[in-house]
Amino acid sequence: MIDNVDRKILYCLDINSRDPVKEIAKKAGLRSNVVDYRLKKLVDEKVITRMFAEVNISRIGFTAFKIYVQFQDITPELEKQFFEFISKHPNSLWGVRGVGHYAAIAGFVAKDVEEIEKIKNDFLGVFGKNILMKQVAVNTGYYIFNRKYLSKEFKLGRVYDFFSRGKKIMIDKKDSQIITLLLENSRIKAVDIAEKVGLSGNQVLMRIKKLQESGVIVSYKIDLNLAKIGYQFHKVLVYLQNYNLDDKKKLLDYCSNVANITALSDTIAPWDIEIEMETETTQQAMEIMSDIRNKFPNIAKSYETMIITKETGRNYKLPKESYKE
Image 1 (cartoon, rainbow, N blue to C red):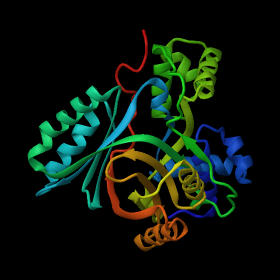
Image 2 (image 1 turned 180 degrees about the vertical axis):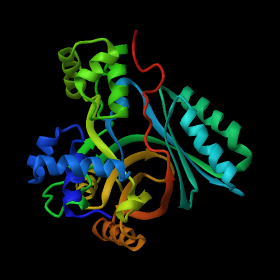
Image 3 (image 1 turned 135 degrees about the vertical axis):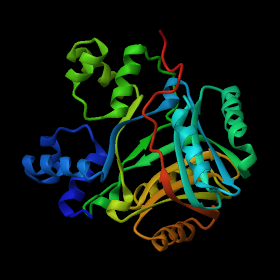
Image 4 (image 1 turned 90 degrees about the vertical axis):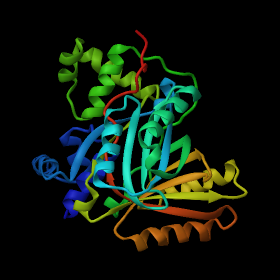
């Protein structure tokens, strides 16, 4: 388990995992040597499983979608095959197993409807005989919030918009290489990136700055082994009624300031939004959803929950055809 010092460090890393140790120490009110030692320990003990750049794929012309499935007669071999498929598919983003209305989620990116159809058919071609029911959900908005539950001192939740609209950003091969390295490790030094991609350190820094300013790189985050800090990952599929843009903003603002809610996404699916939360107990998750229904009685109709028990983690690579030669 982690203590309050670890929590402060994790809270700062969750806001910006690329910050230097000195900056984290300043924000957390700790000494640099303490932060450096604790950070290495959190990584070595696999509390932090990854530090990475969050990329807004819609800015480079891609759409995210997920296939929700309920397997029939799930076996360890089938589960292994599922995760292998996710890890090897060039367009995969995420794969999870869980307990609830759906048993697994496979997340992908695609450049158009035709590619969504092809990827779905690829998936069904492998697993179709094992699927009892399925549903495709296309993301039309995705908002990540900082992990406020790590700190009792947060004042306002941060919202990272991963589907900001606007002109498509064209990136080249060097940009793609830089992004890929930051996806693998957000703390990699500019000089090390420069050596790997054949640019100078200043050129790398300028390109990173441009990618941030253009909204391609949205933030630098961390993945946590929730079991090691005593938390569960819940995904909630919420059915809405009488839903308009004003309601959406109110609900988004509310969720961004609930300590345990870490993400909200708009979807084209039977349900309307998906809420992700990290809680200490299932009861805590149910209480959060009860509060939402009480505060938004005219729009929150019903919901289904899924406890995530195993995941691949977000993908370390950009989708194919993501850059222009």
